[in-house]
Length: 393
Image (cartoon, rainbow, N blue to C red; front, side, top):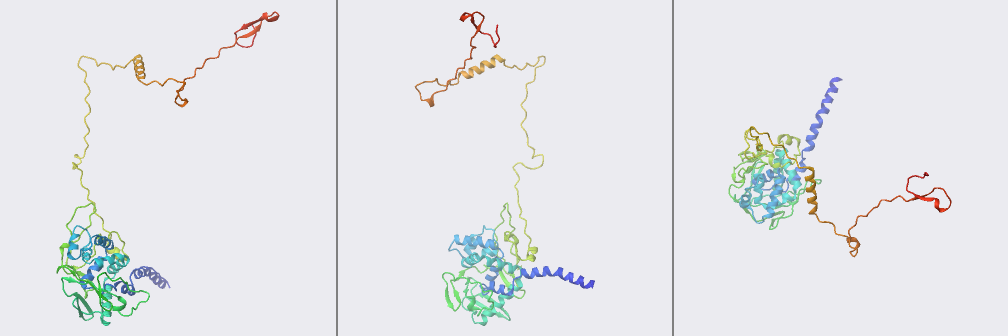
């Protein structure tokens, strides 16, 4: 009985982490929904989109720059932002302003796509291949003068027909994939881009974007089911600049692509496993030393020397300090008051509000004489008495 209770307790302890991991992972219906509008892109462009989606804030900044500089695309747009500290994958999307604008408008979709790519990269690659097979089965994915479609078993590779010109397709997922199979999760839809024309049902094509032969540095390893760096293109990386906030710029190294959390700009990862894999980097703060600061002895503040006091001459006593007399100080105060303006005299003809107040003269009341009777009749007996009190003399 005790063994059974212990086993049940261990099962209850193990279930919450597994449930949390399953809850944070995207289901197949959600992956089909978010990958539907980009699964038919050329492999090189698709890899750049997946990498850039892990840095949504930099995508927003790049889209704002693109709107502020209309008409710049291709290599010219990438070279124009050489001084920016964005990730190379974000810089590469400046060559395609329409695509970058849609990623900015659908920012929640961009963030979810990046989270799914970081946490479920192999499943994302499998979903792309499944969507391509559905489009090929309906006859809507075929090679033409704009792109090449190569099938290697169950793997479908899409490449640009001319490596120096890239055509970004726009298509309707409800048409190219056939009837949609997730009613609760409809595919992400975009509006057709300006200048695009319908070539076949469900497909729109625009003017190709001219690039150099080594423009893309990313690709997809379908057998290993991950994105990798296939070409080291150093002109995406700007030269190091000393700043107070230093974002570590990693060089592009051929091999499996690695996410750089420095360009995440503080956005929390959806998956706990991804958070452990990419902890938030500590931003390096460089403080320039103050002029003249060096060793502790150099940092001492020198105080000005005290004023030298007069030394008494030998054989002579120091003179006592002379204090002004009281009479002299009184005379100085009188002299100071003499220079002050006196208040104007009262003038009866002047208005009352401008008339100066005169000090009232208060006189002391003199005692009134008191008459006393010293005897005798009549009035002859009363005399004036200036004494105090009411007693008689």
